[in-house]
Image 1 (cartoon, rainbow, N blue to C red):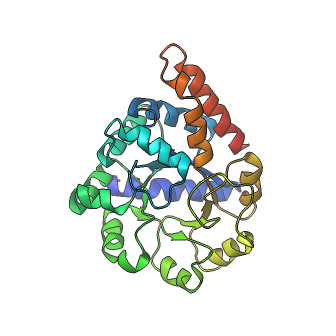
Image 2 (image 1 turned 180 degrees about the horizontal axis):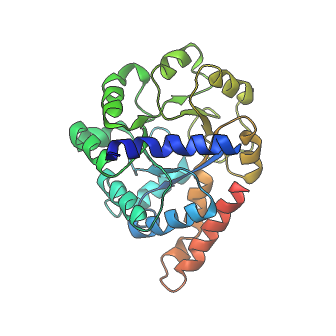
Length: 275
């Protein structure tokens, strides 16, 4: 099997396996390089041990469109280490070398990709076995070239659908790969006690328009919310709550003698989401 096939199939195979088992994918998000790239690898190892199924690797960016304050702070911490897309891919490699098997998705904005260079970007994505990518500031109307390049590289360009997408949903889902990412609420990322009105019906409407798995994210922060969304979604993304948990453990994570305590707290938090 070629590297392209391996990277393409890892995420698809995970969703297929979970569907067969009647389970929903837990998809954590973290900001690569927070608090430093080596510790990110350690956290990834603990997340898989805790039951994470797929992982979003957030590329830190100084001018984010979709990130709330928790993830913005994580990006600022990571940027002090000059973390780039290339660093994120090296971290993915480092995690694989530690035995991590779950699929990786790159969450990044479009400008860092342009700076990287499209040809080099996709070659590097293939070489590092990345299964998919999310680009929140790339509208579907301008995504044609990226879709074609992603398909050729065996990397899924995962579409975002919001409650306000309305009659654009069909166009967004046309030719989509991997899974569909449904945004639970309007606005930026961040923990929420409640979600957009009729969010369940919105997700069911999306599911009726695609054969792809459908995951929901933005604002989900507790095991109770994960269980509730799991009743009608194929995957649940938890971002800010996990990034906040990492932030709270930084005093331990940056202390070599107590680092393992911080890592185990993060592992416990993710395991509770999975329950």
